[in-house]
Every structure is written in C-alpha cells, then in structure tokens.
Length: 269
Image (cartoon, rainbow, N blue to C red; front, side, top):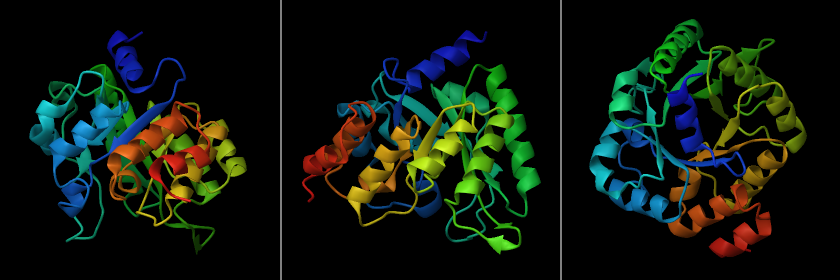
C-alpha cells in the first residue's frame, strides 16, 4: 500500500460520506480573467469559508492566493493544458511536472484526455505515463474524461450516455484514481456510467448555464445515481453570490439537501 496515495485521497473525499465538493478554477490559463475568478485570493477565501473539500486550479493561481488557503482545503493541481481560446486547437500537453504538484502541496493532480480526438493515442499515452509517475510519488490523479468525435459515423453530444460510459471506464483503465466527466442527463443513464467505472466519478459543470435550478438538479440526480460529488466551476462562481452558491453545493453533496432547499438558499424560485 502506498500510504501517501491513500492519505492524499482521504484529503479530497469526506470520510463520513465518501463524497467531494471540488471547485474548478483552472479556466484563466485558457480564457484569461473570467468574471468570478478575477481575484484569486477572494474566491479562495470564499471556498475556505464554506469548507469545500478541494480547489482545482493552476500553479499561478495558487501563487496569487497562497495566503488565503487553509490546511483543510485540498489542492488539485492541473498538469495538462498548453492551449488558449486564441489558438482554439484544444490539444492537451503535459505542461506541469508531477514533482511540481508535490512541491505545491497538492493532494491530487488533474489531467485531461479527449477520447475520440484525432490525437487520442497521444493524449492517452501522455496521461497513462503521467499517472505512473504521479503514483510513484504517492500522488492521486483526477482524470477529466472528455468524449469527442463520432460514433458509428455520427457526431454525438458531449454528454452522450454511451460515450461517457465508455470514457469513464477508459480513464480508470489507464490508472486514474477518480474520473471527472459529464452528467449524462438522467439518473438511469448515469447509474450505468457509475456501474461501469470502478473508481469514483465526480461531475463537471461545463459551460455556464442560465438555469441554476438545472445545475442543482443535475448535481442531485448524479448523486442519487451513485456519483461521488462535483468538480464544477463556472456554474458556481460565475452566477454571483458565490458564498450562497458554495453553501448550496455543499448542502447538496454533503448535507443531502433537496433541490428546493438549495434553490431557497440562493433565493431562486
């Protein structure tokens, strides 16, 4: 048993319920100062105050907010990236070494694989070898499993149930300790994703939606289907009143709140 690996996993998942609330703030490396994360220190302070389990972000974001961190808030440091919205190619490169993640005190590393992309093989190899290096250092890995491309000659939606079932399992097969991926739109289809993946699954938030209620419903339904939490960003901190949004997210995941209670907390009908 690798004790370091186990201890770091325990830092990310609540020991009482085995669930995790991770707030993703890794967007600025790709898209610049998005509203909601313009001030790294302020948003980290809000997350610490609301006792979220972890923050997924980049090394520069940590540098800019280091005084705001608390020992109870786990760092998930992104290792892949290497593109911006200016170039638009969205091809993942390993841009941070696993040793750097340890030097930053990370509890977990984050790597993205775009399954179905024309460079799928490169992405898979890169992720698998990086996972091996991380595990040798006692560092768990969150694999963001994306489904791109076509199936049977037709393009599919990013949350296509069959595709997500496949990529979640593929992520676990190359050694990921947990998988971050899309919610598939129904508890029944997502339960099959969970059943087919032997490591914990947390859902991502994707592009900002105007419906906070739908965000909360997706979180609730994913948990009912066996999901283990969230790794959501823009649909938490880009809606304003971030403290209430964080409180509601924590309530849904750890407090087993209803969607109605979460909506009442942020003041929506």
